[in-house]
Image: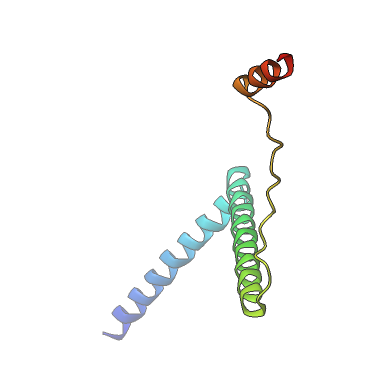
Length: 96
């Protein structure tokens, strides 16, 4: 019984070491390094987006608590351009 237990433990450790070795070798190939780099950049983008969203939410909350004007960009009103009907009516009034 004791020998059987040690045999199973040794076989399990060998399989574990073999799997870990294959993963380490794959991660050091060009494709493996490229995969790790793309995962790192994707994670950095996600972190940046989360931080930006948190900053925006905190600013809105702070402005609401302090009773400040909302942080929206004020829209400029476009000057009203006269329509063709308005132009023709003003020309007719000027000629009379």
